[in-house]
Image (cartoon, rainbow, N blue to C red; front, side, top):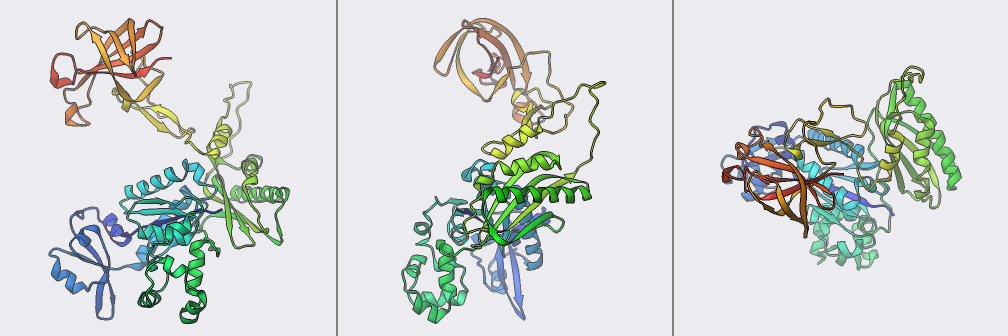
Length: 504
């Protein structure tokens, strides 16, 4: 069953203007003005303007009279649509093979078969909202079984993220207002005049009188929202995308038949990529079924490849997830992300030691989803928690190394954990410490290693210090602990003790 994600960008026009002019103060109320002949009205307003009582549809002259210092910018629907298209293409490369614009202020995507690559629906949706917010865009997003339900929930709820469990769509949308049905304003107004207030009120009403008065659109929108009528998402495609397709005169559905044609599409895709000197980094298989629904599979690689056998294997391992239903009428394979690929001669084992290529293993683990694959690299910082960064598993060496004059633990805790310590003097190591409820007697110790704060990062670290000790308990386990401060001057730290790492 498909899962639709609707991304709502309520202040897209004003966010676009602020992104184009970073010098604008966030406190300056901003509105976008639309016009028709001599009439001018507010088409969009940011949060600062809405807080001052302005609203969409208000005459521009009245808004200018009510709010002093109001910034008014003429509407530019073409620029808004261009920005929405760029955001949609970005979402296509990051989240799902099936992503489309939902103009004028939204994006819709089908994440079935791709959400596991983001760690599940919860992590995917929260991460999506956070990344849009990081781009300066106010965002609300919802996941439901249908496009209509997700669209309505994203625009009717005040929460940033809404996730409706599978099968609960009807219960979730019953109390939503009629305006969430994507019907023309005239029809919504007429329905309200007749006494209808919510989607649930309309859903239990006989269809014949509604169709006679308003036409088939009301019933169609209800059926799409409740999942009784398919509403396929026509995915957006970049202009320069490399894509191959196979249409069938008669629908196919046998797994071995699907596998055969997927292998042929992979071969065709690799030939097209070879003509352009490219290798695929992310490929999407789109399955068009005869019942007007779409399924998708996404496969990614750690580096650009054109290996036909390997790409075929990545898709073959997941073909069993395809549900052909009444049959498949078309298969499409697209290289969503492609990068230059230069063929290199492999080194001779007679003169050079060959390096084992681990990228196939990275590809297998990465396409299983559930977790991100990365490796750690050093950062030029003496502060332990700042001395490590996550980088792509196949990234080039960054040319920085960790200091070797003092030993470092093999496992660094995400955050230093508080411990209770018995120590004789400020400069002496602890005699014993208690960590996670267990008391440990210190048998051997080495230190202190004094680490100073990085005063250029923030002023609170101007005189801050930590004294680190490597300690070994009577069971032979070794730990990395530190005291905050020099043990004498309270301004240098709290004098509390913490455990920061564990040695192998």
